Image 1 (cartoon, protein in one colour):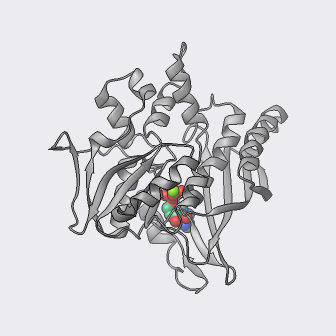
Image 2: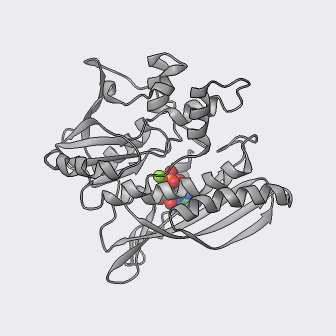
Image 3: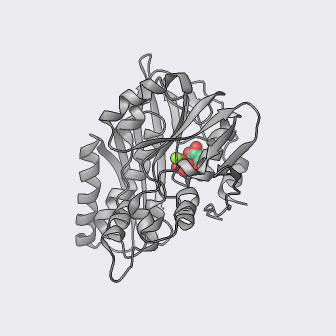
Length: 316
Ligand code: ADP
Ligand code: MG
């Protein structure tokens, strides 16, 4: 069974047993009621050596990454991060490693005003679990399932850069473009401020941590919408294109994963409100398609139907 089948079969059975859980398993984060003004938004993710980061990654980058991937899930809900907990499984008590890890962790935490409030430290294979808590105004969280018909489909940043960076992470003589791409992999920049600014405007949202193609498909399926996607619109950066063909770059952008960009829908008639947000954003934004009620999800490239290869990552 893949991980989603395992979760569905064994861990969703008590869902719905409390009315203060607004949103449980199945989205980027969970949402619970904490009062009349705000809802609490909670996400947790583990990163393990050799599965989520190479053993050669600097401790500083690992400290950044374990928090960044969680903040990205809060961003995808439109939530404001508040607090986090940290569970460290370490093979040894290497103080130099932990010092650099903590620097990477706290530099990012400070940037988004997230406070570490607890955790646990155990001996074991190198793996880090972070749980982040954030909030949204009551009922204002953005799910994967809210897209309607005739809505624009947008993606932040330049997908594919991170996966290309991972491929070069041990390069002996990296070019300037390689160094940039490796940085995109090692230091993902969660789109927290961008996600928050979409509250009240985006109808559905997901972070594309598993790759643009698979995560966008998940969002559309959760929303029961079809779509027309134009692959030619996907914003391939010059650094991504520097070391590979356009075709290879497209494959990284569609199926590479680890991007931690946001993909979301906004009603076409509200696109000017979206444009008005962009001066405050740290990344570009591109419209890559449009939703429709008929269920097909059609990807085209230069007017031809394009079959995206299914190379998405599965743990099992
Ligand atoms: P993401 O990639 O957005 O972090 P995941 O793919 O890790 O999300 O998880 C999908 C959904 O399944 C989330 O709602 C997550 O909380 C839930 N989930 C994953 N593993 C478990 C588990 N062992 N028990 C309960 N829920 C789980
Ligand atoms: Mg996610």
